[in-house]
Image 1 (spheres, rainbow, N blue to C red):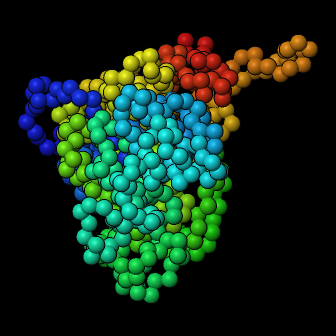
Image 2 (cartoon, helix red, strand yellow; image 1 turned 60 degrees about the vertical axis):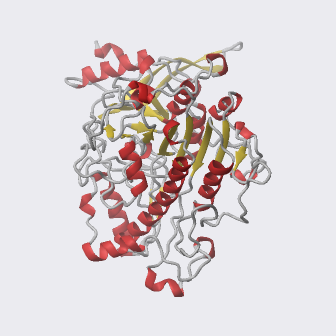
Image 3 (cartoon, helix red, strand yellow; image 1 turned 90 degrees about the horizontal axis):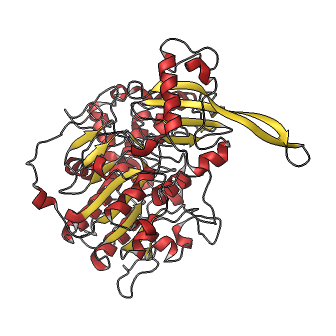
Length: 563
C-alpha cells in the first residue's frame, strides 16, 4: 500500500521536534477528479503512469503539485462526505457530516475550526470561493461576506490592515504582486486574483501561527473555451470567458502541440474515463443534445445533459489540462511564498478538492481514474478526492497510501489536535484525528467510524474499511399512534442492502453482489455479516439519524438469515 517514490535520509527526532504550533494552509480546487494529479513513473501502482487502476493522469503537467507530492504524502482512499460544493465545504470546516443541501443564508450549522483557531490566537484568512452561507443575498460568494465571519480576519479584499492591501480593481486572473514579469502576457487562469491576495497576505500580514484557506474556482464550469494560438487574433468568444488582452497565448496550446506531434491516446486512461470519452466523441460526431434520465443504478446522480460538442476529444482535453496547468502555476507561487517567508518547515499544506468532477458539458474532462461516476454521485468517481499533505520533518516525503480511509470531515479534528486546542473549546466532531496516518502509521479508523452518504429518498451509501462499500435502502414499517391513534409513526426500521462492492479490488464498481434482497447465500453471507457488524459498531451522525429515522445503530433487514 505504501511505496517510496525516492529515498531520503531518515530524520532524527531532535530535528523534527518543533515547539511552535504549526500553521495550516488548505488549498481546495472545485470539481477536480481523483485521477487528475500527475502520474508517477515507476511509483506505487495506485499512481503509476498508464496503470489500468491508477489515479495518475497520463498527460497532466503540474510540476508544482508533483513536487508537493514528492515532498509529502498522497492518499488515494480520501473521500468527501458531501456530493456537491456547499455540503462538502461544510464538512471541511466543521468536521461534521453535512446535510445534503446548500448551507444557504443561515450559515454553517456547527462552529467552524477557523473560529476555534482564531480564539486560540491564530491569524486567519480566506481567499477564493465561499459557498458556506452567511451571505446578505442569495448569491453565495465571498464578495458579500464581512470580515470576521466564521473567525476569518481577512476575507478576499475585506479586513486588510491599513496600508497592506494590494492595489487592484478586480479579479482578472493576472499577477499583481511580488515577483511578476509584467511583460509576460500569458493568462494563467481565473484564480490568479485570489492567489495574488493570498501571497500578499503571507508577505505583508500573516504572523505565525496562522490558518489560511485558498479555495480555487478551477476547474468548475465553465471551463474556458479558447481557440488555438493561430486563431487568437480573430477570437470572438463570449466576453465573460475571454481575457481582456488580444493575441494572448493560451495555456492549452502546450498540450495541443503535444497531441499534434504524438497523438492523443485515450487508452492510457483507466476504464472509469472511457464512458466519458464515448459521450464526447458520440455527441461531437452527431451534433445533437441528449438527455440521460436519472440513473437506476445505486449511486445514480441527477439527470445529465450532454450538450453539443464543437471540439475534438484531444482539443477538449488540451483546454482542460491548460486550465489545470494555470492553477498549478499559482500554487507554485503560494508555495514559494511560504519558502521565502521562512514558514515552510512548520506549515501543514493540504491540497484537495470538494468532490469529483462535473461530467455534463464540453471540456469537462476531469479524470476519475478507475472510479465510476462523477459529481453528485456516490460512486467512487464522485466521492474520491485528490489528496496531498506536506509537513516537512513530520510527514515522510514521497510515499503513497492507498489503504488508509481519510475523509474531509477529518481535517478539522486533526488540526484542532495539532494546534493543541483544549477539549473544552472544541465541539464534538464526526471526523477523527488522522495525524498518525499522515505521518505514515497504518491502521483502521478508530471508534468504529465509517462514511455514510444520504442519497435521494431513503437510499444510503456506506464505505467501511478493507474495501467494503454498500448501497442500501432504509426500509421502514409504519403504524398508527399518537394521542388520537391516527398519527403515522415508524414502528421499526432496518437497512436492506441493494449492492455490495469491494472497491479495493473493483474501484469501478462494476461487479456488485446480487441476490441481496431475497436469499443471500454462499460467499455473500460472510460479507453481509461483516457489514452488519460494521453498522453495529459504528455510531451514525445526527444528520443521518434525522434523515433516516433509524437510530444511531441501524440493523440489517433479515438479520436471522445471516446467522
